[in-house]
Length: 118
View 1 (cartoon, rainbow, N blue to C red):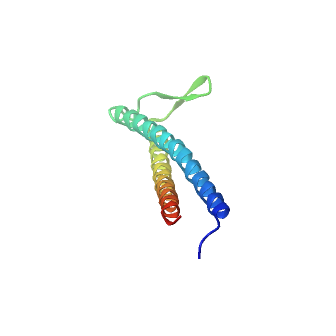
View 2 (view 1 turned 30 degrees about the horizontal axis):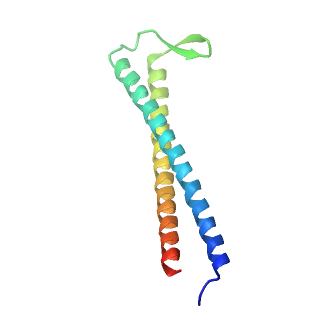
View 3 (view 1 turned 90 degrees about the vertical axis):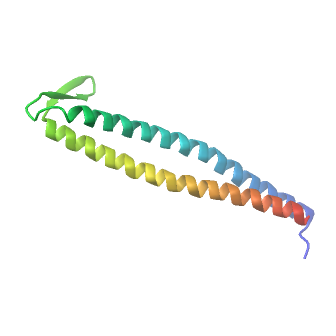
Protein backbone atom coordinates (compact mmCIF):
# COMPACT_ATOMS: atom_id res chain seq x y z
CA UNK A 1 0.00 0.00 0.00
CA UNK A 2 1.53 3.27 -1.14
CA UNK A 3 1.34 6.40 0.94
CA UNK A 4 0.17 9.51 -0.96
CA UNK A 5 2.97 11.97 -1.73
CA UNK A 6 1.45 14.82 0.31
CA UNK A 7 0.94 12.63 3.36
CA UNK A 8 4.49 11.37 3.10
CA UNK A 9 5.87 14.91 2.85
CA UNK A 10 3.82 15.99 5.85
CA UNK A 11 5.06 13.01 7.86
CA UNK A 12 8.67 13.73 6.91
CA UNK A 13 8.29 17.39 7.97
CA UNK A 14 6.84 16.33 11.33
CA UNK A 15 9.67 13.87 11.96
CA UNK A 16 12.25 16.48 10.89
CA UNK A 17 10.72 18.94 13.34
CA UNK A 18 10.87 16.35 16.10
CA UNK A 19 14.52 15.64 15.29
CA UNK A 20 15.38 19.36 15.27
CA UNK A 21 13.71 19.89 18.65
CA UNK A 22 15.57 16.90 20.06
CA UNK A 23 18.85 18.30 18.71
CA UNK A 24 18.23 21.67 20.37
CA UNK A 25 17.37 20.01 23.65
CA UNK A 26 20.49 17.84 23.42
CA UNK A 27 22.62 21.00 23.31
CA UNK A 28 20.75 22.46 26.27
CA UNK A 29 21.04 19.29 28.36
CA UNK A 30 24.76 18.98 27.58
CA UNK A 31 25.38 22.52 28.78
CA UNK A 32 23.36 21.83 31.94
CA UNK A 33 25.39 18.68 32.62
CA UNK A 34 28.63 20.62 32.17
CA UNK A 35 27.43 23.33 34.53
CA UNK A 36 26.36 20.85 37.21
CA UNK A 37 29.63 18.94 36.94
CA UNK A 38 31.54 22.21 37.36
CA UNK A 39 29.53 22.97 40.49
CA UNK A 40 30.30 19.48 41.81
CA UNK A 41 34.02 19.95 41.25
CA UNK A 42 33.95 23.26 43.11
CA UNK A 43 32.11 21.69 46.03
CA UNK A 44 34.57 18.79 46.19
CA UNK A 45 37.48 21.22 46.06
CA UNK A 46 35.96 23.23 48.91
CA UNK A 47 35.39 20.06 50.94
CA UNK A 48 38.99 19.04 50.30
CA UNK A 49 40.23 22.39 51.56
CA UNK A 50 37.98 22.15 54.60
CA UNK A 51 39.28 18.69 55.51
CA UNK A 52 42.49 20.25 56.78
CA UNK A 53 40.58 22.54 59.18
CA UNK A 54 40.01 21.65 62.80
CA UNK A 55 36.48 21.60 64.23
CA UNK A 56 37.25 24.76 66.19
CA UNK A 57 38.14 26.79 63.10
CA UNK A 58 35.96 29.70 62.12
CA UNK A 59 34.36 29.38 58.72
CA UNK A 60 31.92 31.70 57.05
CA UNK A 61 29.16 31.05 54.57
CA UNK A 62 28.07 33.65 52.06
CA UNK A 63 24.44 34.71 52.46
CA UNK A 64 23.46 37.34 49.95
CA UNK A 65 25.88 40.23 50.40
CA UNK A 66 27.12 39.18 53.82
CA UNK A 67 28.93 36.30 55.50
CA UNK A 68 27.66 34.32 58.46
CA UNK A 69 29.82 32.26 60.80
CA UNK A 70 28.87 28.58 60.79
CA UNK A 71 30.33 25.53 62.51
CA UNK A 72 32.72 23.54 60.30
CA UNK A 73 30.68 20.33 60.71
CA UNK A 74 27.48 22.04 59.62
CA UNK A 75 29.10 23.49 56.52
CA UNK A 76 30.66 20.11 55.63
CA UNK A 77 27.26 18.41 55.89
CA UNK A 78 25.67 21.09 53.75
CA UNK A 79 28.37 20.79 51.08
CA UNK A 80 28.12 16.97 51.13
CA UNK A 81 24.37 17.19 50.66
CA UNK A 82 24.75 19.66 47.79
CA UNK A 83 27.30 17.35 46.14
CA UNK A 84 24.92 14.38 46.40
CA UNK A 85 22.02 16.44 45.07
CA UNK A 86 24.08 17.60 42.10
CA UNK A 87 25.16 14.00 41.46
CA UNK A 88 21.51 12.95 41.27
CA UNK A 89 20.71 15.84 38.94
CA UNK A 90 23.63 14.93 36.66
CA UNK A 91 22.39 11.31 36.54
CA UNK A 92 18.87 12.45 35.61
CA UNK A 93 20.25 14.77 32.94
CA UNK A 94 22.35 11.90 31.61
CA UNK A 95 19.23 9.76 31.26
CA UNK A 96 17.42 12.61 29.52
CA UNK A 97 20.37 13.09 27.18
CA UNK A 98 20.32 9.40 26.28
CA UNK A 99 16.57 9.59 25.59
CA UNK A 100 16.98 12.68 23.38
CA UNK A 101 19.89 11.18 21.45
CA UNK A 102 17.85 8.02 20.86
CA UNK A 103 14.87 10.09 19.73
CA UNK A 104 17.00 12.06 17.31
CA UNK A 105 18.66 8.92 15.93
CA UNK A 106 15.31 7.17 15.47
CA UNK A 107 13.85 10.24 13.74
CA UNK A 108 16.72 10.37 11.28
CA UNK A 109 16.41 6.64 10.61
CA UNK A 110 12.67 6.95 9.98
CA UNK A 111 13.22 9.79 7.53
CA UNK A 112 15.87 7.83 5.65
CA UNK A 113 13.61 4.77 5.58
CA UNK A 114 10.66 6.75 4.23
CA UNK A 115 12.80 8.34 1.54
CA UNK A 116 14.12 4.90 0.48
CA UNK A 117 10.57 3.52 0.21
CA UNK A 118 9.44 6.39 -1.91
